[in-house]
Length: 351
Image 1: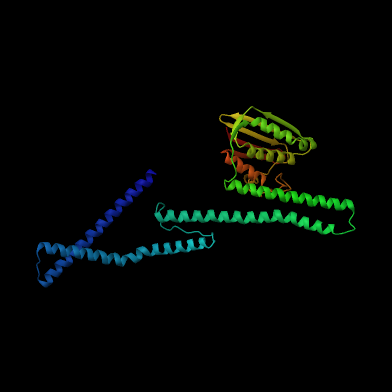
Image 2: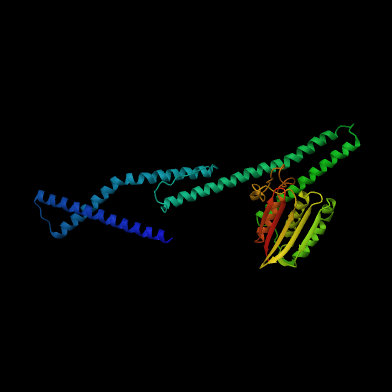
């Protein structure tokens, strides 16, 4: 900052010196020209008149010179403004692949800052457009897949000679796909409301350890069915938050852990208080998440490679919803995982 201010002062001083030098040059030239005219016409005006004529001549020469030189100085600016307007028009029409070059030779030039600002805006809009297109593609896929399945099995059910057991099997599949569509619709609606900040946020003080204990017991049939060992180490912690919203976070993490932990595996839920934060850790010894997938695991509809990862099944919205809810509480959620060793989700929330 100090260097930038020093450079600005130095540049301003040099500009003033250059202007004074140019004015002195033109006034000197005007003086000699008017003296030559006086000598040619053998005319000796009064000192005041002589000074006025010299001043007017100096201004005239200065103006003529600037008029002749300005096209050369302003050509670059005209090109810049034309390119800028073209870029803005392209952005207005939805073309965000716009990049302007700043050829001013000065990092702190106002035009350089303007170009960088426009390039940043175009890049952000381009990223948002790509996310929008990806979102539409993902929604279409998530909706289209179960609909295709339902249509196929519904067509098969028209066969009057279909065995009863097979008919019931097809009906079970149709019911499963309908439930999947219903959950997708609910999650999309929930995400939309969370994004628009219209979701009712009701903070109350309650025992976080009791909430976690209750939800673990609620999931008991699922983890008992897979003979999973559930370990809960919960400190007594009182938190002020939206209990209903946070329950969605814990249920999502628990369901993921149960879903991807192999039969006979272990899930550990820890709650501890550190300073003014509540730390919740949900870990398992499942297949883990590849390192390259971890930065994107909280993106909407993101599903990692099914052959290598646990991020499969569902709609890919659960962790995105959990991430949004945690951020609404001014908290942080992160993942630590290694293939073949398991996954650990860490949620930090202010008390």
